[in-house]
Amino acid sequence: MDVLHAALNVVDLDATIDFYESLLGLERTRTAELDGQRMVWVGGEGDAELQFLAVDEPVEPAGIDHVAVAVDDVEATVEEAQAEWGSSVVVDPQVVGGEVRLAFVTDPDGYHVELIEELD
Image (cartoon, rainbow, N blue to C red; front, top):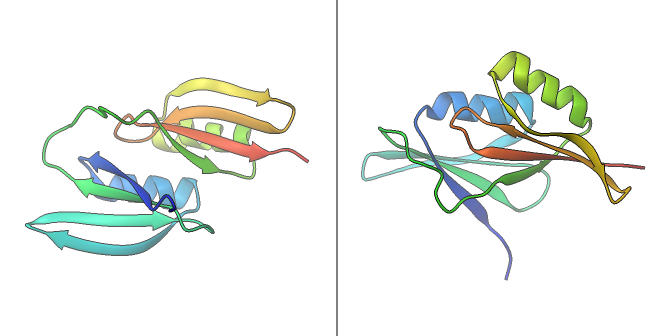
């Protein structure tokens, strides 16, 4: 068994894809449409993916706490998220357990995104 993806309902599919591709460096892995609903998956170096489901009206992110993405530099990514995407900082950058630096920001639909930087 393995984690395949987390699915997120998004109002502005293009803005969401741009956020995850441009800011976080994830790549579009596939697209589909089912019963008129557009779907896009993005992923990184591993097998796990995020699936974005286009919806017409905002949906509270019920049942989803956050998604976690590895980044090279937490502070720089937080700054870019705020400047380029209008993201809110939910949890300021901090070192946890001496092994990782992390922070939480919001994406264009208000989902919490945990940014994790492995420390040397």
